[in-house]
Length: 375
Image (cartoon, rainbow, N blue to C red; front, side, top):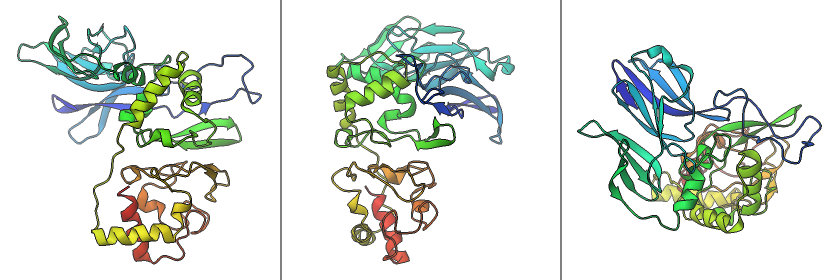
């Protein structure tokens, strides 16, 4: 967020609301290599996730906004002179890590889609993570994995740390896979964007599916996806990175290194909002309500497919790690937040289809919520 006169400019991510087709007209593609599912003809960037610059008035009303073409993962920006300079963490090999848009003096440009006036390929192994203007008016870019600080106009390194064993896979995770979308587009910092997507397998029954987080013991959560159809990291990469995102084939060694890195990412945890005694009651209630029947083990999932009664479809049991800081919960985002999930009959067919809450008092249910927030 940056000030601009009496207004505020905000860099944000925006998802396409167009349903994502993952089959052809006859239930499957006839071509051996179908088009990437995560491309989108309706979006001006050609993908399902856009980087958007929004102008807000002093009363926080949206004035105008534009999609910034060629920015896969916009992480920071700065206003300098008559331009907006954006740091792009999603630069693929040889792609621009810094892009300039403007002129801001003609404010009508913030409307629809905008291509960059100028792009800059950074002389660094890391991904762009922040941008600023120094005392001399030069644009300075910070990269991560590895750390470096570079003056963009001259490629002069102020600080540079050698690459390490994670550099290549971190770049792969953030880079444009092929159609303008990266793993980090939906999984920032290895987490999730909180979006609920509409997938079309059967035109008569669209599927609502929330983005699943990756951080938090991903190697203990096989098989993958809500339908548990992908049995291994290799299968996940072939399905998602290649078929959905348009990326090239990934060899087993790279996949192993990527998932080792992801497995080491810590999931976020909510700060305990209740006394330890209440949380202890909630832990007991977790067992009493039979939550641990499905949400078991160190990552709180038995990795099986089951039904919670609404809708009648069966889905994989998700991990509960970090659930206290997420919103739009359950596979279809039915529950606004964790508190809403424990409101009986809101998202389940009765209070015993998704954990048996019938034997718990209102105080125990509140304690159960407090406990789950600490996971």
